[in-house]
Image (tube, rainbow, N blue to C red):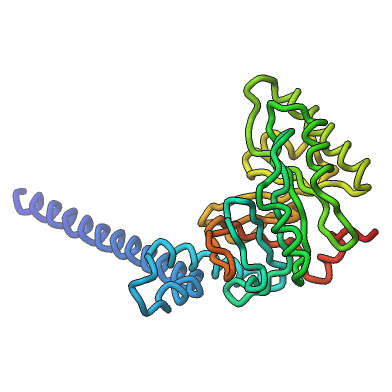
Length: 278
């Protein structure tokens, strides 16, 4: 009787050990597979990261550069551009050419903010950028608590668009403090309608992805959107976006400060449809 009991215990222990081994083997195998898949998927970014041979390049800069390289690699057929404001300081526009071996084709330049602010570098940036091969666009930073028509007039008085430029852009990022969301939407509609009547072209609306999803997507379905999303795990733009601003940490020759980088959702041939034609 005692021997029988001993045999059962030994059998259970042996079975338990076998199960534990195969469980561990499976888990380890899955981890190795996941690592190999990640290495393969991010191979371009990894090669970019380790291509630096100097300690002068900071690790964070290398990581930022690796992501930019990875995203651009996945959008080789799309059109790349950037945007600037007074925060970039003096720009040597003759040196602005490419980023990570991708030709820069367009630039959005901040013109105004609110009802009375004119970007201190707009006039200079606009005039100099127009002398390059870059296609230029101007944007207005919308202040939710200021009169929408006064803001539209500020933009119109500052920006003279012409054939070959990009449509005007409404940049809305903040929530109002003195009015409701519904009132904000009314103001935004007044701005885009006023701008449309003046320039005879529909503005593009810029915002963060969360803001777009929560407040703008359904209300402004007749407009095209330029969306900011810096999520390091996001590598492909959504089909419904016209432009994707995927980083604010790009390094471009001629610009002393880091800049936002943008991808147009289409080829260079498609991009012609986005430009003001008359």
